[in-house]
Image (cartoon, rainbow, N blue to C red; front, side, top):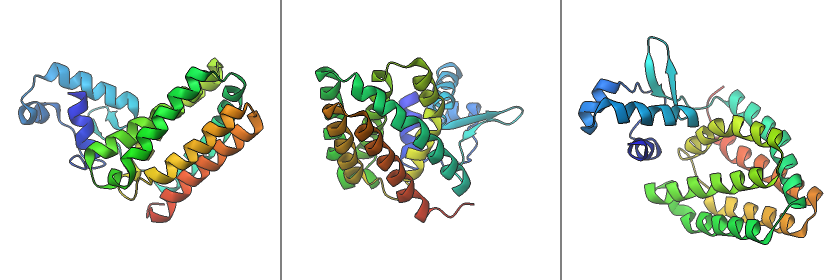
Length: 211
């Protein structure tokens, strides 16, 4: 059920701010309310769904420009530091896993902007790339800060679906990060990650009309 709702969020069936009434969804999707509640709770944890007292669940609203700018600023502090730590702890297995996510991201290509399956591949491979680097840093505090932002970054990725996924550009940026990590140069890894986070934000902001 989680995957069904996630696909509906990705393909635009469920719009930002739309109420998610459990009773209505149960009838529409022909499932009992228990797995539906579990799915909504998982989506709430990811930041894609929100819950308010007396209002219930609803699709998370799109970011405002200010929120996106603040999120980018937080990522620019945390993710380069994580990349620097990971460069010092690189292993062949870690680098190989990153390479797989880049191949998947590149494969989603331009279709990620129009095809739900391609966008899902873009989404999951992008998220896994960053999560792998966070785990490899082997710093519970940096990784905790990363995961505190992860739900908001998920919302950011979903918002990007409304414009262009830019999977090809993101894959090229990921490859530069991988190359820097493989070199074992923490400063280079941090700089490539910073450039990537800045570029991702810049790709979204010009098309965003929020405040």
